[in-house]
Image (cartoon, rainbow, N blue to C red; front, side, top):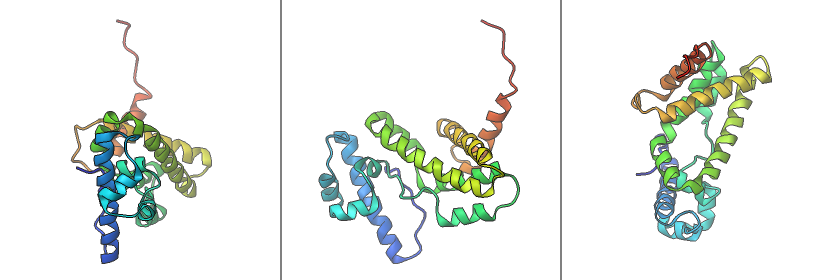
Length: 198
């Protein structure tokens, strides 16, 4: 099983690119899962995927990114365009911005399993998430009344994303819907009363 789940490509060229990306990802995932990150070389991944090192680096910046199937960009042009054209409140629009790529691109349950089994992948994933968060903040700034509001709104949605990652009770529901429910849970906790000491 692989982690990356890209949307169906439109052209033959795009399909071939997706097949190459998927082959590299599956080779890296298999080798890193068996041998660890330090026990796997890019040359081994390339040999397993039947690609050159140059081709490897056209798709992934590192073997950790390849093993995790981290996409080059977390936000497609189409999703960015939808966000820029959205009307209404900022946080629901950000839920769509974050949630739609999550549905289309990554198998989060598998990613959690791999990271749990191979914790040496955590730094690569954390760095990718920081980059993604910054992309979301930059986009949110285009529609938010201030930088502070953009940062707070993205922080809220990313916290909700963390809840969604750990809650498998509604795994079949769309990520956007689950994100909006998680945002509501987080906001509601602000007013939760403390219980008596035990």
